[in-house]
View 1: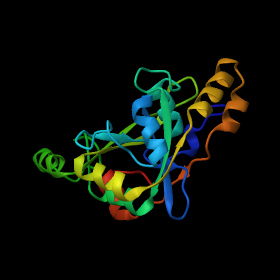
View 2: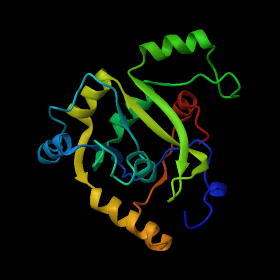
View 3: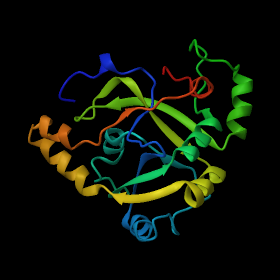
Length: 208
């Protein structure tokens, strides 16, 4: 980033673009999936409802994952605006993908965690957030994996709008490659900390 962000961000917190009713997440797909989705404003075949699909509230983490929308089968980046009610259902019905015995926030033993993981329709990962050069930062960004039950809810009930942000990805990348990080940062979607009730913080082992 243009300036050090680590000191002003909680270690594990959801940072996203959101409104009182919606939150924006990102996914990257090839044209055969993204084009029908943009036309229908929902996901259609060959999008699969039976595979886990991962949604990401962090624009920069999506940029890192897709290589600024250049990796194979990730050539188009979509901003999907979904209902906050659905988003919070996903969090409420989630389980962390990894069990950490050393974490002071761990409330389940390994056997309990394995049972919950098997039963949960949603999985959560906290991965290092990235800067413009994709270097890992010392705070985490959430990735939300939707299993088949959650995918059906996502596609049928939660989606409000789908927007192609591939060109924006490329413009920001061009500024980064030119060394103009201030211009790149001005184009970034504004992401703010998403307030979570205590119950969801415990489920997610979030810092705030």
